[in-house]
Length: 383
Ligand code: SAH
Ligand code: SF4
Image (cartoon, rainbow, N blue to C red; front, side, top):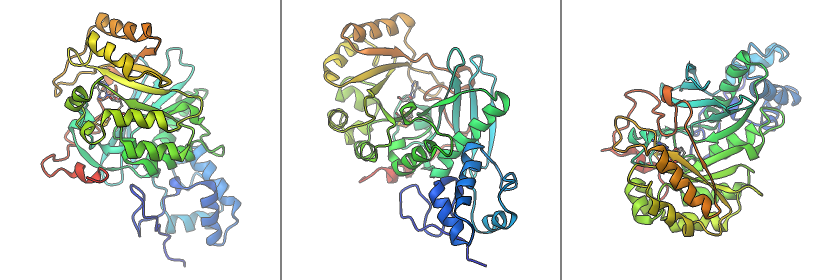
């Protein structure tokens, strides 16, 4: 009998040396090579990929046309990977469903599946890390600190699980858009995020269009450059959230490390999705970033960048010291940008009533990393 297959890829967020190979992190080609190395026909790799990705199989037993000896070999030598279990809340009045995923080490992450108004298609907002190290002052995920990166298979499996869950209840539902806007900073975990995009856009699997995938970052300059170089075809969103270096530092301390001017410079100089504009997200905090002068300051700041501005009225939480602006203030802010010829939209958050709106994803009550020992800092590059 062969020894258990292990990975030797020395990458951030990927399996450590000696960790089991997770089938859900592998492409059809990699699966083909794996099964061939054990003496099975290479086309079985594609078959496995289709079972896991297209059909969302949760067990090897489900894969009825995969020969018994191959399933036995896989069971003995590999792991499926992915999430260990899920709790789904779906009584949001707008039809959204919130998924609380349990991971193999007991940690939890949340994701949200949202219908568009006409329920023509669904958008899935997924997590890239357990917690977040970036520490934005208006975000519950940030408040709770950082635990660890998600592996490629854990990122991918949020999609596989949610898509199957949706299709079992609504077989014709169009699971179409993906946004990396759940828990975590995707561009501090860039390799697994890029790998997950490649797997989820594979024609043998979920077959999402990269143009309908958006990765949102707080402005991690090296991660943005790495993401641009990867040329996945997926879109970039930058959480701008304030119009000046000083204001941004106050609510996003990461701005000290990666200044606002540098973040905008990367957007100007590096190619992201072809013929797709970059989105700037801007959280409106009452009396902090929602003033008319803030809107006016954005106008010259973004000049010359083909972009869209997405305003997100702050979603309150008892533990956060900010307020949500009223509708008139939000509309006035949007009008100033629109008058300056920017494309601007307001994100009237979904799933607010189930705690699934932007910035509300905590993973689990009581899941909080200690800030004093600051495990988060270790995960930031060059710090
Ligand atoms: N870490 C990434 C992606 C996850 S956060 C990032 O920051 O871009 C997704 C979006 O939610 C970001 O634009 C962030 O600014 C916004 N957000 C965080 N907390 C929020 C809150 N309480 N209300 C509204 N938006 C919030
Ligand atoms: Fe992290 Fe994004 Fe929340 Fe900031 S807004 S703490 S980067 S998840």
